[in-house]
Image (cartoon, rainbow, N blue to C red; front, side, top):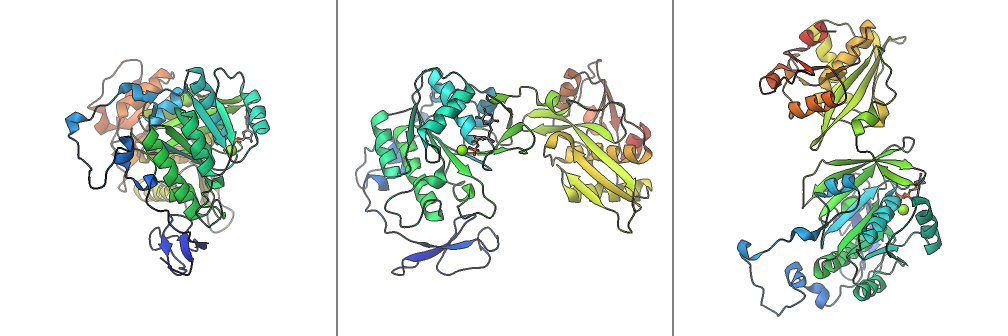
Length: 464
Ligand code: TYD
Ligand code: MG
């Protein structure tokens, strides 16, 4: 660290600290992310300097006296999980909000983070919890306007507009809420840090203080963090390792649905998603995303194939669309929206080599309808079938679901949780399912949905 000089360089992406400017961050390998920031003096080690364990034991701490515990001595209270009133969010959190946890909610500006958390605030207050919503971005009047939009607020959530964390700390100390919401971390600052709000050291130190508040007093803290690509503020990735749970709120601005995705969770599984829809009066849960994704699908159009992808423990049906047209330039164009471009190229190469399709004179556009982003290999077979369907201009039966991973020799490989995928398709009224043959052995034929196992793509194309 630059002692005496008073400044150091920080990576905006990951928070890596260096004495001199670097073009590439040695930690996260991003280019051109270093910014110079003043380094403030460190606090004298007082109560703030205590370790997590001492804090969670209520600060009962003497120098040189930390005692390890046996597993049997640690008790877990099931009551420790609070329901948010949104089943979709509870599942992503691993079953509810854990007491004393620190949850980071990241997302692009304007995606609906404040709206979601205000609704959570309302729900929790309705269940008799004490909630404190601290905004550093909006005035109390603006919050009131938003609250009016989302409808009746039962209970008495508290609101505070403040950005100074030392003052916020005392307010929390006084009010003793169960849940605190900080909107957003990039507006918060600590007096003893010399740099501006939103800078790497401010964001990091602010989160540190919030962590001590959460662990020390058993308060669940939600932190909103804006994701900025090339912005001047430090991104939430700087704090990902400090918090217990990281949720990302994503979605196309143009589409009304929003997905909340768990990328890190110390209290549950990751890869879970919750689906919401942005309405006139706030966010509403989408209980059945498959139905929602397939809404308005054209029947009997060539190039459209319904696939099934797993999002955590939940199967989601979606439509893979392909448009294959003769190319007018020498170089065929390929695009992939919502899925991996390189994977699409690879699958087309497999089709050329293993099935002798000549795709070099065709442009191919692949799209996951509804604006969802899916990169699961289980989509492979559906992408292949969509390409072939569009090229031959022959529609795939609209009541057929297709999934399976495609290998380089054109073989169809097993995917996980095939049974759940088939059940989901059956639930939505599909009557045929084309899937890897290997998966078929372990599955039950329920009668309602016909399961067809295929070994390679040629066999699958033969069914078209
Ligand atoms: P907001 O929660 O302010 O986003 P963030 O906190 O992530 O920056 O969301 C703002 C957007 O949501 C804005 O474009 C308006 C829209 N919106 C609705 O469509 N319906 C509503 O009921 C509300 C409150 C907002
Ligand atoms: Mg906001």
